[in-house]
Image (spheres, rainbow, N blue to C red):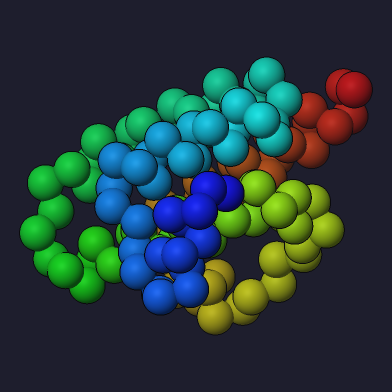
Length: 115
């Protein structure tokens, strides 16, 4: 994390989209394996592309703050120990998102078995 990022965190200022995008991709490069990085990079690129023209400020704040938390977790490697048991988050997901989460979970379990 560079000095500007630290200062922005202290002042609770959101990182602008392009520097945040670069930060996430950089975190993938340094903290993920090749397969995870490829999958993660594609997902990040698609998500930022989808949100390129969003004008709703509340949606943008939520989007950027979520990606900042993700980048922080990757950089601190806290995601390795973290257990996700947030039932409020699960209850807020729609059926499609739950299906995607299930498919991702199955794919990860199969990958672990094959290793």
